[in-house]
Length: 291
Image 1 (cartoon, rainbow, N blue to C red):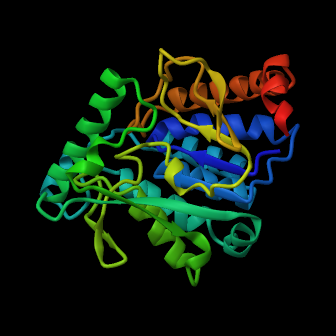
Image 2: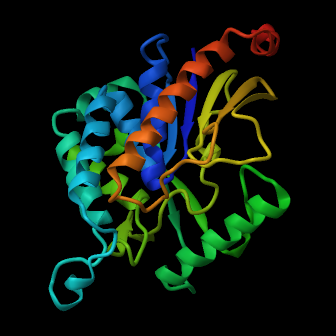
């Protein structure tokens, strides 16, 4: 149905994407040829292609149930990390990707966004600067795809899962796209420092192929000035945007609230069911009429 897909990042909010995808894949076959994804969205895209969304949702819920806090202050005097997020990501990727590498590569061309910061900015400062520029442009210019940070030297690169030789290389690519110092260690990819692939332009549409067809764009952020579903023509493509129907009860770095995780997943499922009705509406049929 959709030739290409885009999945934005969002940390814990990407649980909404899992619920949404589980709902719609029960009724329709997505079968995209290309998926462009960033950060947590790249993890969700991987689970989709491996057919492990249910397992991933169960894993994240169990993690939030067992993790008591998002900051482990006692670890300031130990060798353990103060922030548990990177360890949770790493263990989850290691566990859920096991045995699924070949299936993922065969299913679609997954292109993962990694941001390389300007050489003149230390990584924690670069992360804060990128987030600030992205937020300002979204809030004041109302742009879904900000570009201001690129003028300051940030670069968005797309790396293919199919270019990875094995699952370990894929795991490193996904973790590089989720890199948020100091919440995670500083990571390097392709010889350059890596930052979260959603820091600049959270929904990474720049990696799409310029071919005729339909594109599904899932952003885990809620933008009050945009509808839950809307479609626009982009040349020979039809871009269908989907966002949560309401502000989600979970924040990006909330990994200790299992009830918020459950509610976010359920909102995703409900939005997925509503999206199926949107697909059969007259509005989308008219827009798809050129096909």
